[in-house]
Image (cartoon, rainbow, N blue to C red; front, top):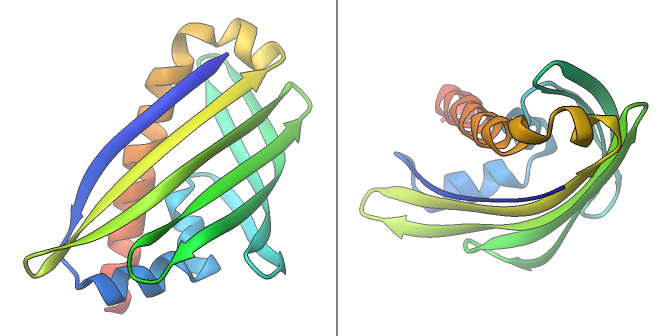
Length: 149
C-alpha cells in the first residue's frame, strides 16, 4: 500500500541551528515518534527501532535509515527500509530547509509502502496515521531543539 506525505512547518530558529539539529542522531530520533533508538552504523546511515500503530495493528520495525544528496543548510534526501513481525515498510523522501525571516521553513516530503498484515488490516488508517505521526514528530522536534537553543 503506497502513501505520500508532504507538509511545511515553520520553526522559530535560524536555519543553521535547524540544520545542526537534523544532523544530530539524538535529535533526529525525536522526529520519529515511538523511535526507541537511532544509532549510527556508518556515515549517514542509521539503524532505528520504531514502534508503529496503524488502526488496531501495532508492530515493531528494525529499520535502516540512509541520508544522501546532502546540501549544507538546504536539506537532504533519505531512504528507509524496515521489517517487523507484521509487515515491512520502505520509503524515501526529502527534508528541505529555507530561511524564512528570523526562522526556518521546514518542508518534509515522504513516499512509502507498507506490506503485510499491517497494510491489509490497517489500510484505511495508513495515510491518516502517517499524517498524525509526521505532525507529532515535528512537534517533538521543535520542543527538543527549542530546549537546547
